[in-house]
Length: 427
Image (cartoon, rainbow, N blue to C red; front, side, top):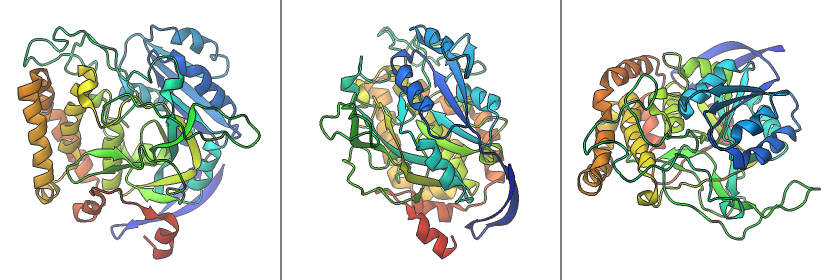
């Protein structure tokens, strides 16, 4: 361990000197729920990291598919926590983070396979960019057509007979202290707008030099960070593009996708609200975008590191929401309004009124005309208004960046700032 003096200059409002005590160890936190088909290769990639100081913490959310048998095989070298019920991705990750021992935390999905130097690259970048609290690498698609099944199931399939109760009825028990009792338990995994299965063909990317080619590892981009559009929708930067080096510069981006996000412990402590790093009201989906927005408000940067490469099985993408189980769309709609209620100012909503209102009207119309079971998701924020109001007050009281400055990030084309230019410009 060593003392490092850090000068952070994120914005005109954020100029202060910190002294931070750092540790070289990295905690890797994983939440599993019926994830058995991915664990062997995910764990093999973790064990093959050239960065050896890893503390792995796994939280299992009451898996029933044989996942627990696989987890018992790694108990001698990694810590495994078994929950009696599925508490959701957000609560599961918070549980793992609280148990983590290190000053760096890599939140990792079990359906992600890391390149051997993934952690090393992120640690090296973190030691050179003390103004950033979040780091993400280049995620490419791991072809789900080459796996058993069709990609990672973000939620248990639910029956067709009104899984959320009678029309218009509010679900009960989405999290232990909140509202829902579903006949399909959401699994906390991929954190993005839901949609279709994606089968990536061709575009084979070779493994690291000296290893055999794995046909499941494509060079189709999954994510190079997340960005927000003017209608307050978040998307993965570069998704579906063939990687030919167009994202090979280190850049500051809005935020990191939750599939593989690397955090400083000081960042985790600073942005947590009421003891929660990920908002547990979300249960699953969009909590990575909510975290990214909160981090931007509080003056933290997210650095994209292209040399840190991993492969991700992403079953859901933003194109075909109607093909997904109802439970996924329910959480996605619910969390859209929770995220906005905590983070967006009246000024920002007014500046983006037309695109936001247009998107909202589409959501309302779909809930009224096509599937009234989603209406309880649209109105969930009202039932959770006390919690939203309380968290909003905390977040807004700690903000260091104005929405006038934040508005630049809300664009129909992804925006980023080259890290070298940012340093040269003193931003």
